[in-house]
Image (cartoon, rainbow, N blue to C red; front, side, top):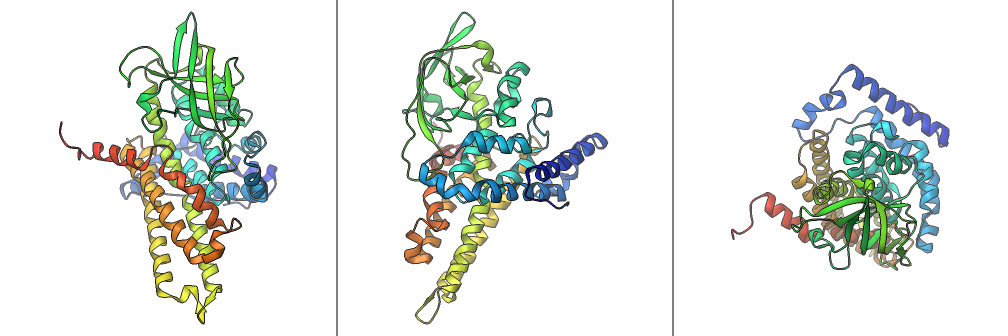
Length: 428
């Protein structure tokens, strides 16, 4: 792969080279990289190339120069400048890696998005990667796949360029993991929808330019009466609460959004009316894959820093690491991380090959949430008193990554999905 330099122009040139070579391969070989990965897919893995590594280095250099130097300040402030950061990322082409080239994306396959998401784990907090993931893998996949050309030009293109910040409106005060129970409505009036209700736990909500909103439209069946709608956040009748004071993910703004007779044109509907529940379930697949892959490097860093600290910290005449209970446990945790990486890569391979990844994505997300608790708890313990200090990465990860077992479907919901997929539920 070609050398990269920490300047915006060089980073942009580097990633442009990745895109050009990928598109050339697609032209020469219709199946493109998917064909090259067929043997790897059979083995449950991905064939990562020098271009994937070039992208990884581009993202790593951007994080080192534009994000990590500011993370402590953003954590203290309880918010990061999403428009500024996203615009810089959009200029580099990083916000639409697997989105259609026609609407400003790079048109690459999901393996590149996976590499991008994994490298986001190098950000020394959880809030900023989560906010980026909302922009790339939670609020925009359904729009990219099912939206009309006009709708994609209006909302997707500026989101890919970093001119718009997006948020997702699914959860409500009485409907979190139980998406079918949402109460927000979008009633037809002429050529418009009139929206009433509210959304809870809205990441990016205080800074967002538009929301991908799930609302009840016509019909009674809870899986067939919901529609996804693009809603500009400056529309009359929208009220945004002050950002929440959270336990973790502090640099990411989270709020509640209220809708009081909010009028938007029906042309802002994503795809077909009544298919919003299905579209959102498909978005959840990408969201859960993102959740699993984006913590892998964070896990690696916590382990690396714990090993370094325990090697240099002496107790009772020897290093903490020299105690068998410590080095055995760290070896076990590293094994668990690599197992999660293999599972996530396998799910990504199936996703690239257009297979249903409900089972594997749910497994990966479940395992990521549980391993996050297990790994950060063990590593924090090995730090002793320093593990309780905010200045250590493990302390921040301990708080931030607790959300993995709650957001995008709680652990118990993942288990319910898996039991249904595996036909383990008791018969009625």
